[in-house]
Image 1 (cartoon, one colour):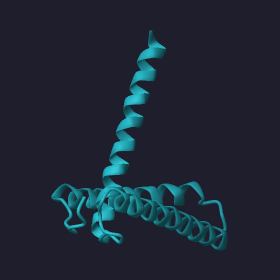
Image 2 (cartoon, one colour):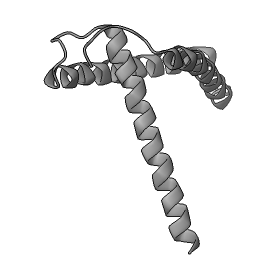
Image 3 (tube, helix red, strand yellow):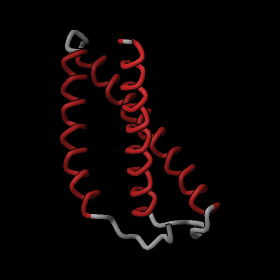
Length: 109
């Protein structure tokens, strides 16, 4: 990837879906912890937000270094790193789906 900084149309469409997924996830988490007091709930969600942000930042930093190792600029554009993150997530998800399908077929034999 050359760090051109473009985002594919499918990435933009996925962005809308990701926002909906995030909202559904947050609602599910809120339902799960409705028995907490308001302070506990707020602290829980604040902690989860920063944990996820730290994980995302670590992934993006690692991808940025990998992209440099494969010939991109030393500091690739954020849009390029975000696109690569989307491709990586899709790849890992597909590998997991295929593994699950194979294990289910093997278990039913």
